[in-house]
Length: 222
View (cartoon, rainbow, N blue to C red):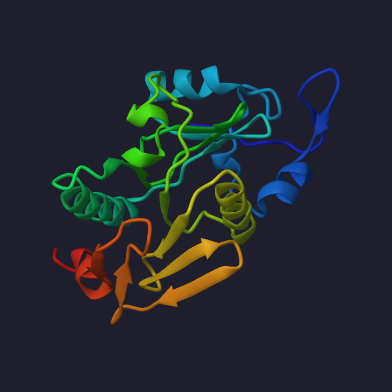
């Protein structure tokens, strides 16, 4: 478990990183999601791998800061359902790969994101082959984020901008509490689908359809 950040703490000899600095990047993010070891601003990809191996915790790496993923039980149910449905659709057609909430991806040197679900078309891979390694340099065609109460608007807007900047073609933000899905085809192209509507894979996963009522019903089955 990450320790609480104290304000005005010097983390290295050259930079002074404060709680205010964190807030400027991520908004009012809970302090437990910001890892203090290694000090914010000094983390590298090896730290992401080390923490996952030792603690089974997944952290994204942004500006040298380790931001722990916030995934609760309901969020995991929805992410698992979406993953299973997309995989069931794409595998028989040999369209691509689907990874879950442990799928760490390198978007740039020093930038690691972990979508709750990611889909990569084989056609998007150089030579049709997946790069090896615990954090492969792969940009997904589709990134799915299931929103937690500890996700902040600034955090998710920053992530959305980064996704499209690096080549993601389609992003879904799933809200378990509102039972909606925000569909983004660009940072400024936003469509909100409600529970009575149907989600489409568009040009990214052609032919894929998902009735939101069926998806969110998974939360009520118990």
